[in-house]
Image 1 (cartoon, rainbow, N blue to C red):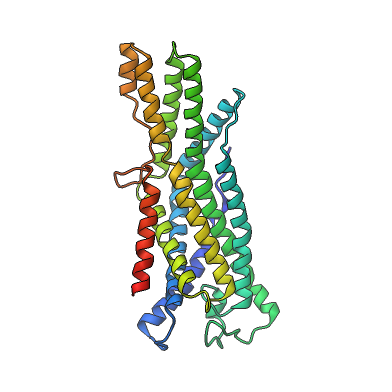
Image 2 (spheres, one colour):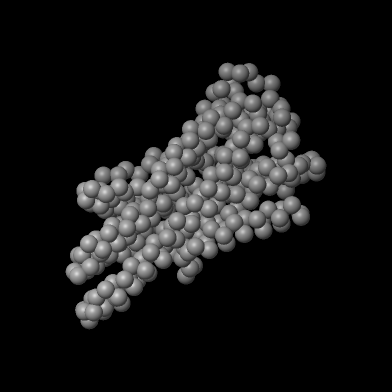
Length: 342
């Protein structure tokens, strides 16, 4: 039995740091003291606010649908075991590499957050930035000692671990893994169809399994969580790219490291997993056409007509196709250009 990650059940650190970010933004808008604050600081705060809000939305959604999420993942695991029991390789190499990248993110993100809290204790979203009375700027140390900085960095480490583990769980496990299993199942059906081209009934039964797995996947990522996910990826990537383009020479090194890691992960996410999540659609469409060509039985033709292609819905009536990753990249680039022209 799969157990939901503890990160999805512990949104409190994100809430604390989100309040720090909100306080900083409200102070700047309601009681502006320094009108020469660099734009990259506002962008960083909006990036943090977007990230924290999306994390809370993920936490609430998957906690509410905990039973469905567990059932989806257990079903995907069982399907993979059944395919593997036939003596065929299952997981594709690109998914294995993405898992490795996710593990690296889980290690580096908390380390970078800890470094920020130690080097810049007065920089939001660290909670220490609101308790030090002598913080005059983000570069100030608040006259704090190293022991106090380390103690203040511990919650920041937990924040980074919570954000990284929640993001990895949502993307790598819940979103991408079932799509990977659907591709594995489609390949298995194609192999069985080539071996049993005169009897397609077992393959049709397996396709029903694929259809049920796809329905569960769409149910877990029902509206509005998929729209929030796509929007958060687009906006966070744009914010990170803006700071990397305009403020590399002035932003702290830990911030640059975190944003570089975020930009790299999101770029790989958009051009990689988001692209291959559209692969079940053309492959399942081609498979259904093969069923129709290889069998003249009226029953099979009627059965095939009742089987829709496998596709992952985006929540607004659209679905993942081969152009989805390009559309997301274009929207992200448009946002970056808009920020640069402001």
